[in-house]
Length: 507
Ligand SMILES: [Zn+2]
Image 1 (tube, rainbow, N blue to C red):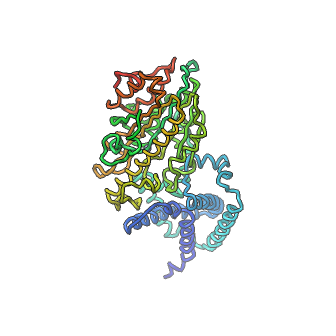
Image 2: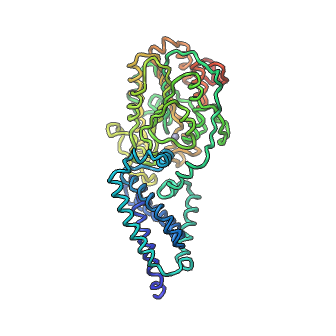
Image 3: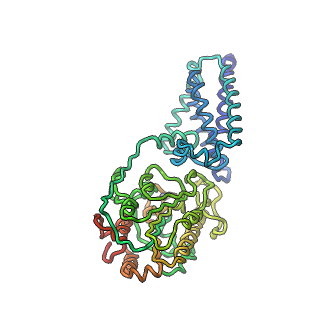
């Protein structure tokens, strides 16, 4: 009893502090997660409690010395609470772009952060902060000698244990995601893009190349490739369209795939090989206009490659794949329409969020062709049939997206080509594995489609013949870089012409 009495103020302080932090910061990362069923809620509740417990450890250590606490805690609390608020209200997740924007203060403008509304919010947080300080000043025991210290150390250790068991379990959520975002932003750039020799040229022929970089779409779920469900109702009716069912990659996650597809890096090169040519640097030097349109943020791991485009147009730049309220891919058409021009040497890349988990957020209701679908994000609680339906609905949406894009390009009546390549496939329950970024054959056979206009067909009959001849061959994603260079007849630059899909007799 004496024990409780002695540490009463201290226990009370940490209880209140953790309640406040839990509601204003930690819980925001769970608020938008779709869940249904007792099991899903329980799992995520335990997840949340563990995360908060680990952060309790850090807060405790911070509160041992009062000078440290009075200087560091206010900064931490105010910035994290604001991030928590924007996570709750806008589902914004910390990303490279967000950190960069915060540093450049452009976020203040873009999110209307300096509005009266936000100032009011900061005032509320300041009031809460003073309340915390008052409670803190009442602690009379030496926190370094308190038995609570033992609990705090266990809390901190639990963070490392959980992160070791499953990487990014805590790091992808507030508050830790903020520290990691800043760390990623500040650590030096690992990728070095090689400089392209200035003498690189090309015959300019007024041709538009539209490259769509897909996400998590596997070849065998395309109706075009013989899938029994009607996932491509629009594209099957298109002429001048070829589907490649035998595309392979060794890379099963986005960063590794992008680094390899858009550069001369081969799928056989080691992961840490980071010294390469960006396809965009080559095209820019040869005087083409390169555009990058994306429905998402740019990840540090491939940022320099993307930024080697002449122009970037990002739809939803402060939301990552961790956000559940993200824009649909069709939002990219607004950017596309604003730049797509007739008779210009354009190379436009469009990076989709595609079929990235959580599938239900990737398409609108009208594309919910297969039912029933998933209602929760917690995979073990879901039925395989529902998961497959949701995934296949994202392919129906892709079908719509590509068909709409082709419609726009076709209307221009120009010499154009649209090439769609997914970055990798997706594991859908094979050997008990789901999603991607893992060793699974289903992740290594991504979908690929090529469409060309009638004018293109008349202008480049030999290209079209080669595209058709190569349709059934086994190709690796290395083909892309070399094919683009070959397609534009880039001169004074070495590449592997045997990897070009625009030539016969390859593969
Ligand atoms: Zn991906």
